[in-house]
Image (tube, rainbow, N blue to C red; front, side, top):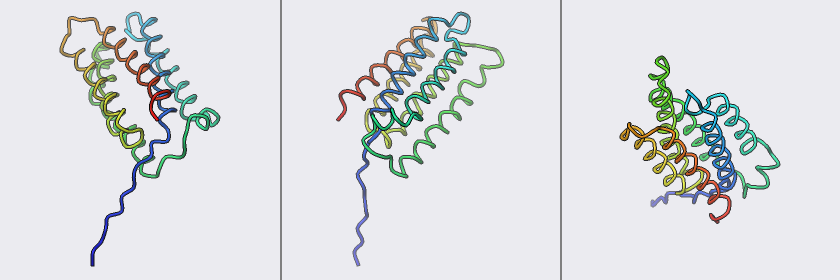
Length: 175
């Protein structure tokens, strides 16, 4: 008896809402850099903007309905939770050790490195664009570690711009 594996092609129905999310988070990071002061990126502005952006792009039903082409599959929903859990685990492991000394450069680079890596499993939710974005964001963060004489704000600004550009692309270009 021959059995055939059942495979389903993933549909990436929420790319445009992800694009909005990237635009908003990139903009929030940019604003938090402008008002960063000794923190490099202002953590109050960043966290408040992050959560407001999350609500706008991911919770607001009217916006999601307008930008969505259909529901995520149960597998994709699991991958969303896996990716978010990975983000927090990585932030704890990479950035966490620098919190007691308040080494803001290493904290922000750790947060950005964790974010770049956590984009990779989002391939299953939003497609290949997330592999590219995750790789680019990871390389930007790695550059901050490698080129320690370059002000970290340069790498964070590059990350901000990259997220905004990918977000615009995901909203407008990706079919």
